[in-house]
Length: 149
Image 1 (cartoon, one colour):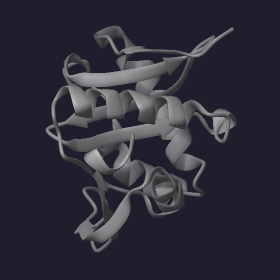
Image 2 (cartoon, one colour):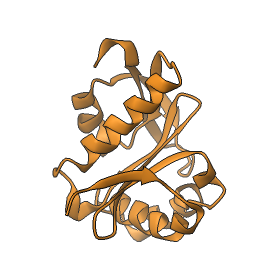
Image 3 (cartoon, rainbow, N blue to C red):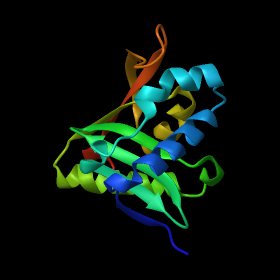
Image 4 (cartoon, rainbow, N blue to C red):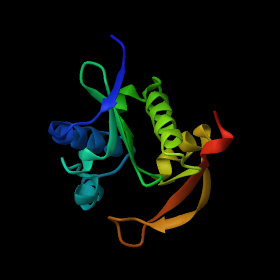
C-alpha cells in the first residue's frame, strides 16, 4: 500500500495530536516534559484549516504544517522513522513553498531533529526560547528554497 500525502481535515485533529505526542516522546522525553508541552503540541481543528498535510498509509504516519514561511509542525510516527515518510512530507513542503513563491523556510527544531533538518539543507541560524519549557532554548533553522530543487 503506497503512502499518500493529503491535506489534513478537521476530523484528523485528535489522531494528529496522538501522532505528535508519540513522535515527540520517542526523543526520550519523560512525562513531566510531555505534560509541559501538552498545550503547544495539541493540534486543533482550526489549525488544520491552513496548510497542514498528513502522510497516510493504513493510518497516519506523519504530518507537517507551513504557516507564513515557517514550518510549525513536522512529525513522523516513531515506528516509521527512516522509512522515507519525512522526505515525502518535505517534498510536499517544498512544492507548497514554491507555489507560494517563498524564498526561504524557517523552523524552530527539537534538538534531536537537527541532523534530519540539516540533511534536508537547513542551517542553524540561532536559538529561540521554547514555547513550553522556561529557560529551554531551541535551534532556529533556515532553508533557502531557491538553492535546492
